[in-house]
Image (cartoon, rainbow, N blue to C red; front, side, top):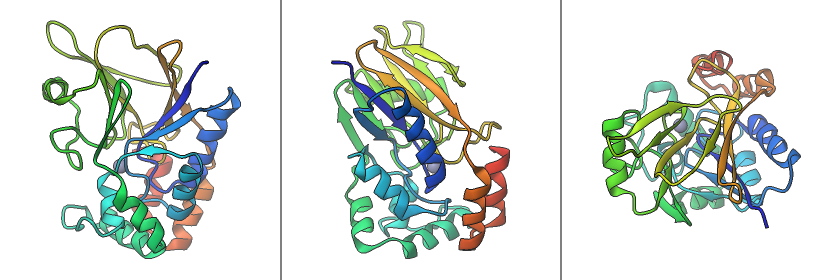
Length: 245
Ligand code: ZN
């Protein structure tokens, strides 16, 4: 029985993008599970719709810094102005039940061979894991074979090798054979890409074949931007979606 898992991170209330990603994943066959490595909300215009769509798929999720800020578990002092404003706005849009759901998400969670964490195991809410030096620490702290991270909004993977970790950027169509080595994998952002490609990013994991395919998906950016403008969110946040930066 093959198991297909859609792996997402940093959806950031971009419901239009999320629906396109789920359509894409489900278009290729049954999706058995959806995993989300934090930041379900923040920045984008439809936090409730996003949470609802993920909950309906019984998402296996950890909390990111934006989730914690939106539900009041974390202050916004460390956020930049636009992010802080969006986090506070998100909090006003969520029902008590939705805030309780976000507050209930763990910072670290394990599933089979995988640990999910938003930033890193050293600093789950805040660390941008982007170097092989940081990866060494992550591999030491990682009790499962692999880990799935988010936070940087960049798709890549890092392999543990005898002479130290090596890092590889991923793009649309990249196929990662899990093989026998340990991995740290970032699926990129399903709602706010930052690598200059405005298409949203996710991974389809085939448990039987032991492969992960990275996908970049076009979506209706203008609709998300219009909904952000209608919500009064920062023009800078609106503009960056089209730049993918
Ligand atoms: Zn994020």
